[in-house]
Image (cartoon, rainbow, N blue to C red; front, side, top):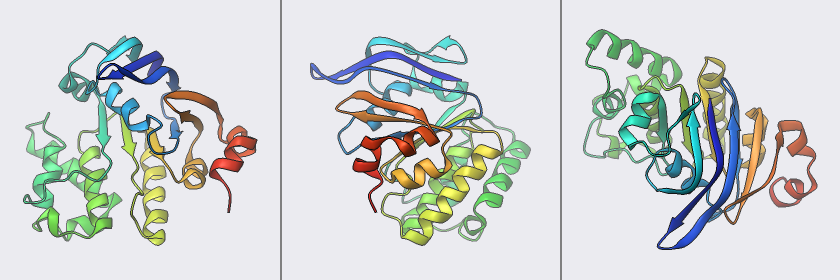
Length: 234
């Protein structure tokens, strides 16, 4: 579904990603682990064409996309839930959700997509006319994921969706992410909460200083000594 082949990126002449290669199969739920500054968000920005790929190639459904514009990537079926929610605070929840479906003008289809979001997060239906900036952190997270799903993506990119959430909400969010995947959406999940990410992932990669240092299926990563030491300590 999505393939990165030895991509590198540079900021002001400094290389951030170093020949990163990843494969995300259709229907998979792949996690990308790593500490702050490892290059996880840069990887997402490269896929979305928000930063230039200076080496290597990116393929989506076997089409080369690393020279596309961002809107072309979104329209092809890749959606993102950015770190920090990034809602428009002075717009209502409904207005924020509708922005996620900017590629459709059909109101019937729009309402179907809203219903899908409400099944995932019923609380949002009660907050439709509320300004997004007045929502709780958990509700903003729900609205952000809901907005991402409004585009009916083939691949959903999630950047630290559990960041700053209370433990009880973290559990709720990971159940929702797993449900989204089980209903057919391929997911690339960036997370610092390695234990939670691995609990739902089918495959994973670990990024350090812009390089992939470990990859494998969930069981292989759970048993990897480096991952145990760095990410899975109690």
